[in-house]
Length: 275
Image (cartoon, rainbow, N blue to C red):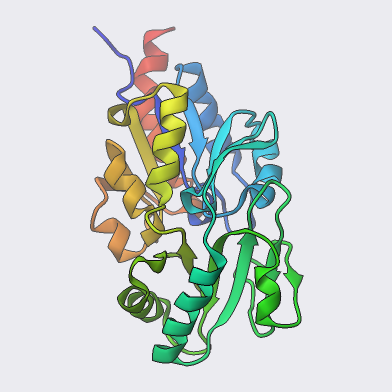
């Protein structure tokens, strides 16, 4: 009997998915990823974090291969510490998009992730980082955000809920940018047409893996395109309703090792057959 697992590529989001709230990966999750590798599978991180902010986590995971960063705008080679592919958001279009959004909802606060493996996260006055542990450089005014090429813009509104801000942004931005929500207090503008699925498809092609052999894990609306691309999408228990609506299954929370719970089940038969 063929007991080969149905998936050869495991694509995981980080925040709210593989990572616990303290930015660590549990021993159980590490063991489950080890089981994937033992069965001949590959693990691919697919995250909204830009490459410079992902590298320390990849080091902890022992990842020396590819990673998809910046909401799909970067395909990063961790071993070589270089970008194999990247897409930038035109800064004039970004300014125009911000103006259209503020015309509808009033003042928003913005930050940007610069392109490149050494790119900085720049934060304008009033913007509060959703992840206080992530390094950021505060600038004196919004114009300073556009000092170098960027991969995305992060937005916060002082009182509007994230879903309302994202919906309004989509309605007015049009083809200027792709609007997504990647976590609490994190509405983002990306290059038009670029999503996590974009980077995942490029990385999978380089790895020689078919989408029909891919299982994906996530927790927020920015993971919807990834689920639509992959053969099987697994939402975390605390995932946003928009993602649960398109998921093939729902696992436990990230704090309860939801990724490991599924991987242990999917890859267990393969390991048993080899003993």
